[in-house]
Length: 98
Image (cartoon, rainbow, N blue to C red; front, side, top):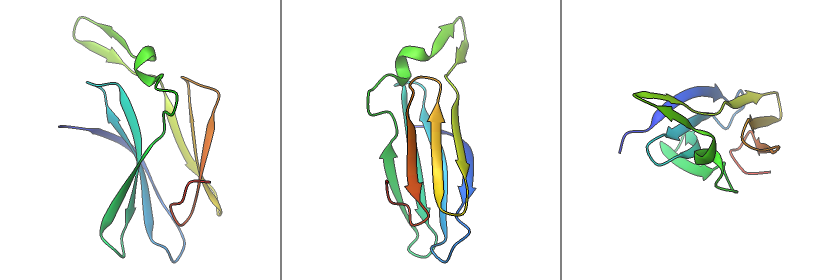
């Protein structure tokens, strides 16, 4: 299965984590992948707990326009916000859901 990856953020800490959005437009799913560089392991988190992402994907002819999913960070947190709900999802620099 092919997944579209868009934005990525590198954790600027000793934990060496890379956070990246991962989209499965065919099935209407969106995830956050957290790569641990030290362990060479990826953890996947579902960032659509209400399963509403697929309801906001516009399809016509051969075109697809998914809702915007934003990934940002500061020294302590990785933040995810999106157009399909009013949630803000937080992860710490270790890659743990807050």
